[in-house]
Length: 200
Length: 200
DNA sequence: GTCTATACCTGGATAGAC
DNA sequence: GTCTATCCAGGTATAGAC
Image 1 (tube, rainbow over the protein chains, first blue to last red):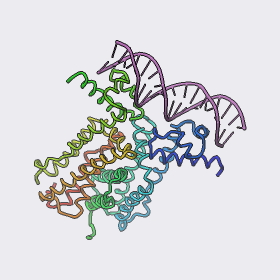
Image 2 (image 1 turned 135 degrees about the vertical axis):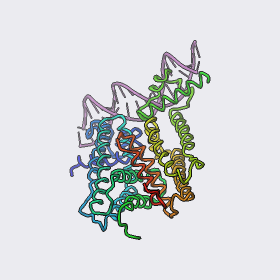
Image 3 (image 1 turned 180 degrees about the vertical axis):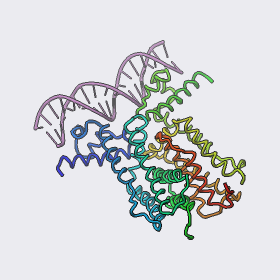
């Protein structure tokens, strides 16, 4: 990795953190440059503008999320279905603790989307594939025989997705809830509506 | 209502809409003043600073929300419990359609809270009473005999609250889902875990 | 590839007239 | 109560040296 590439990554990583902490507007390029250890105009060598830096960070997040959202069906069986679904939520809860910046940044893009068609389009895409993957998981559960085949399976999946997603938002506020218990309830409520639930 | 009071309200109402549409930072006092039909310095006659205007709007929202969150228990009976719970969600879904600004503004205060202790304190308060009221409703349901008394009642209530809350966020993005169906699933999943469910 | 210097603008805020 | 005029800080962005 050349020197150029190094500075490039450093700008992105530092900007990511500062944007999350102070917001896009309250983070000036001068602040970022100082933190990186270069001068303000040097940033313009790597990015055409502040907006482009913001957009670049979004693109990276976008790719990352679309990658993460893909579920590995091979791992799922009727025996471990519920357990794997639980794990999915637990993992996200732990991830939030590790990278508290993600949600803060992401929420800002949601706000930007209100007045920028590009962000809006991409965010709707993300949301859609997010919801779709939950529907797909539950449908697979039906196939495995863990869940009953009801016409409400889509609504059930979306409900689950809403809980999954909002846990992140609530953690952001610093509200200390038993998120694992909440997720467990959500999973239970979807699966227990299913058939032949093993007695605990 | 005097002339003074009139201009005062007009500033607030216009600022509310513009803040929601463009964000706090991208809405300058000059823009607000033009829209109101006065000059920029005239705003300073009513508000000490832009931040104070933003804070004032939050205070009004704060009071309004705390008022709305209070549930009327007298209306609830074992016969109409589920129905009333459903209505609660439906009402919120319709409200969102009517005032699309609310969620956009509110999300901005959530972001501000990350770097302002006052906002943070008040938002946690709101969130707490929001969650508490859902717990209270379900506990009342237990009392009415509509719900089974499990130790998980708190987690169930919080799950329900997360769905309720996140429906608003998803509507914001413009994602067209069957939100009523999702809410119905959530309510069903909480109540059907209860006892003596009437056959459909 | 990164710097210094600087142009240029916008936005918040104040002074003081009416 | 509202205006005109003005100040000033801080922002993005560019020119040009090294």
